[in-house]
Amino acid sequence: MAYRRRTSTLDDLLKVAMKMPLWANLLIAGGSFVTLRYYGGSELPTMGVVQTGHLAESIGFYILRLAAFIGQFVIPPIFLLGGVLGWIQRTIRARKFRSISRSSQPGVLIRDLAWDQFEQMVGEALRRQGYSVNETAKGADGGIDLELRRGGELFLVQCKQWRAEKVSVQVVRELYGVMSARGAAGGFVVTSGVFTKDAWKFAKGTSVRLIDGNRLIEWFGQVPAGEQNPTTISGTSAAVLGDVTAVPGGNQELDGDQAMLMEKAKQLCPRCGGGMTPRFSRSNNQGISNNVFLGCLNFPACRGTRTLVD
Image (cartoon, rainbow, N blue to C red; front, side):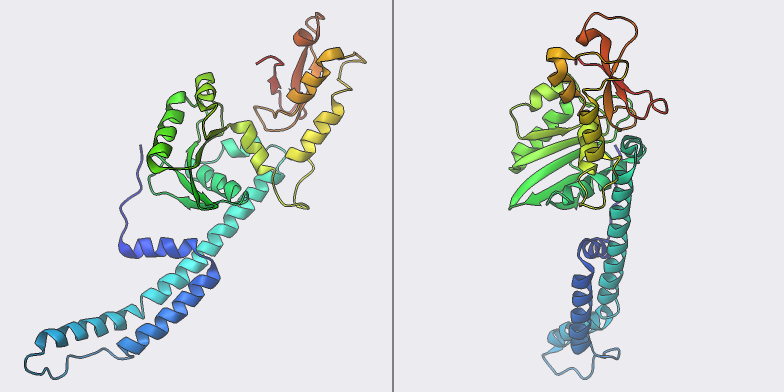
């Protein structure tokens, strides 16, 4: 478990400034400079003549003036720097999010993200859903990764960028325990991979939402109108549904299983995140459940498949 290093007060102040909009930082920087200049002056303050019986008071006043004098050259630049860095950071995140949303293979790009980038992109997706997002300082997989606020309610998020294994029920239990202790209204466990059956079973009926790789790709597809690439989520879903009745491999009827195929076709490719379409297997001809599967629309570049029976 990795933890971020302990930070100083100035580091914490810079982080606070980076979370605020640029206009707010400019306002605070200007206001703090005027106030500190008024009390600290433009020249280094001196003690002056100390009256008898007022030594402690004079020393205290001098320290305050000295702090104000120094502060006018420290506090405003921190807010200016934080405002600019925060604006740059938000711009980069938004562009990264859009590049994934517009990609023909968003699943691949998501799985290639480092754990900290993964948390940032999940946070960006949640911001676009109306949440106020605060990134915690507990490090990679060190507990709660994101704290959300919406409508005065608290939501907790645990991000798992695990490529090689499924997210177990233990992770869901831990989040649920923290939610109960902190009085959170709900929570999310987000992964680029999949969850175990026990994890799904435990989360059912609770306020914990499990977001696997397929659902996460759908989040990335929720971009403003006019920005979405036809090959992203909405486009592929429409293409898949439109192709269900014309299954590659011949004019074969789907009979009563057509509804099941249409529902399954809404799923996304587990390898590249692209759309999927029903295909006929050449191995047998024993019925829909046996000879029809879902194949990636990007075939042969991607050979991802899904069965019709979980």
